[in-house]
Amino acid sequence: MLLDLVKAHPFEAPRLVRLSCLEVALRRSSEGAMTLDEYSGLLRTAGIRLPTERTLYEDISRYALFCDDLVYGKHAKTLEIDPTASRDAVAWMLGAPWLDSPLRPRLSSAQLRCLLLAMRQRAEVRFQYRPLRKPGDPWTPTFLTGIPLRTIPGIDSGYIQLWVANGSLLNLNLARFEESPVSFTSVDASAYSPPRPEKTVEIRITTEDVHLQERLLKQFKGLQKRGWNTTALSIDESLALMMLDILSSHLQRTGVETRQLQTHQVIGDTEIHCLIPKESE
Image (cartoon, rainbow, N blue to C red; front, side):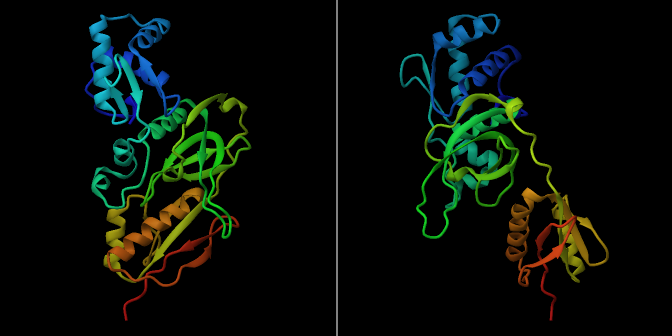
């Protein structure tokens, strides 16, 4: 997604240094453009030795081919961000098979790249977001400001955790970001209260089906055996809902019926839903 998050890329070391400088400057917003002259000035300011103009042109053209959200050549010597591109974001957050899915979520690669850069730099971003509405309320966007903290696995979209200035954490669906810029502000993490410590909770799956238990332990790395009929997963409380969704979907898809979701007491005073597979009759 970002150059320093990709294990294998097609750029040799000197070009990678130049393009990393370009990326950090360009990705401070999910909309924008950069000319060849601006790119030259950026490298000069950063103290990076300038190659020939032809090499600079190849830098930009090859970077545009590497990213799905860049257009180069539409206007002479100008690299432009296309905020509607989504291929790289969907593949990064959900996996390449989702690219052909009829339920492919509407994600913006440009927005995600800006968020990931802010996550790496612990920098604040501002954007418009549509939270789930309450019954009777209009579904209107609101401005949110915060520091992206981490990505969160989901089964229907891409999710990211936002650290808010007062220390609270929000889990956001990238498909509900408005089609408007995500942009850096001038604030960094030094102005923020520390993130509120999260409780650790435990999801337990209890079943007398030893074959189901064995399959779950082999398929999901985080599950651990707890007694003869129980497997469990210890996670941060903010991840509990997503993990329950993933486990519930897996059990239903593989033919395991489930009883009504129940609650049980876990660490401290936190309660969490627990999936109890139905026993065979």
